[in-house]
Image 1 (cartoon, one colour):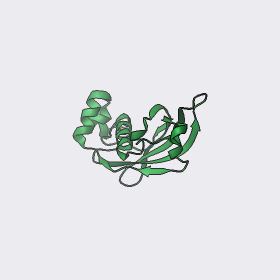
Image 2: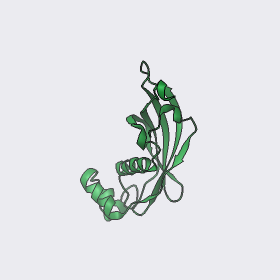
Image 3: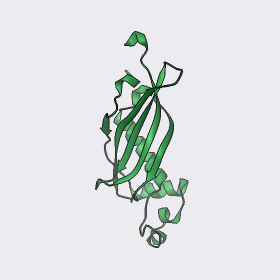
Image 4: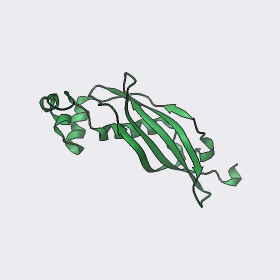
Length: 151
């Protein structure tokens, strides 16, 4: 059973389980996708703006996606993302940090000219183990609308 646009209400909230990032995982991601010195080498990182090894913001974004999917809140809907607004990396994430995602529905509307789908806007905050928001974004999603026969 899927969820439809009418199953979501502005203000609906959810929270994911936690996910702890290992140094090995952070280094592998950095080597493959974001090979900046402060993501790869402790010595270089110590001399950087961060003063220590930090994980890529893109890895934080990928982990966020996984955590949102794992909540099951959006899994069965056939949801398709149309974009991200206001993506912000607010604090560094370090190997050993545990991340969790808090989400809130902030908007819902029918898709213009199409009665089969609508749009959902979800504010996502990725937080570390201390409750510090390390990343924020607004996900724009296409969600199916329940057919009249199903109402």
